[in-house]
Length: 351
Image (cartoon, rainbow, N blue to C red; front, side, top):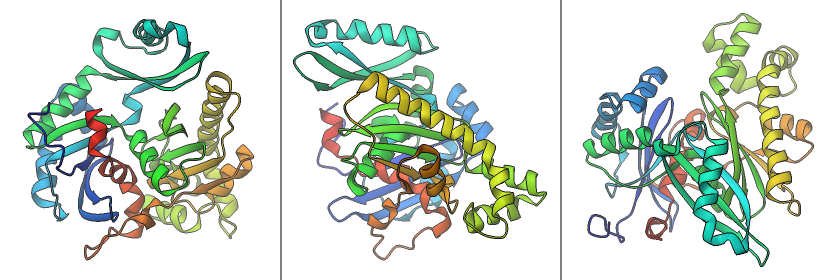
């Protein structure tokens, strides 16, 4: 590995999601964005490409780096984010005296909770906390086919992959640096097609979950219930939202079923964290991010439903674009994950 990559080179973030690819480079000393770009993807085609390894992902990567870059990218060394809903993670406790059996304990967790055979997974784990009585370990698993196809496509685009991680981990990294992430934080990352939920505590993702509802779902809900076009539904979503106003009651009725499903999944994650991970630490803040978080009033909704303070996070304000033109305000939340990937420290890949 040390012969292939240079530790003194900067990294770039590359976010491969269900709806698009984004790239960004950040000078983290100044939080200065030196380059970025994006390309939209067909959700069905990218899913097929990740599963079969066809040329769709690679072709779009080459298109992105050839035609869509604003500014410059200082390196080919890429920290790659993959869809969180295609990965599996679990945090579990083990008596300290049983540390020598940690690898066996990880296999048990995989067999019990992951619906894919161990032989078909890449599995990694680390100890994130310990005391005299017990240790806490986090385990992550990703289908080998997914990783192998991503690596093949990235290599054909002449990039040097150094880290692959779920997108929610990158979001957590950025929030820790910009949004008082030292607090025990519940993250609700509402993307275009899905929502990822995680608890960030002591610089680690302790538990995560998710479901297939996102910002696009909200738009469809409004269009159907209010009998308007998708374009009008999107405008109602981002301009009116669920804040007080003449259309509030109608929009709230349209969005309630999807919001209730997200809230139910959030409660499951909170319950698992409280009952299985720690009984002593409590969640101190709820941060809502992602392209689907641009619904006015959504922070207040989660505050009321969860009975804990929730707000839409704004890590974007910490990024300095210098002389580069910024993405339109409406599209900025889409870049939160890739900003987290781009802010990874190179030494993290060499531990």
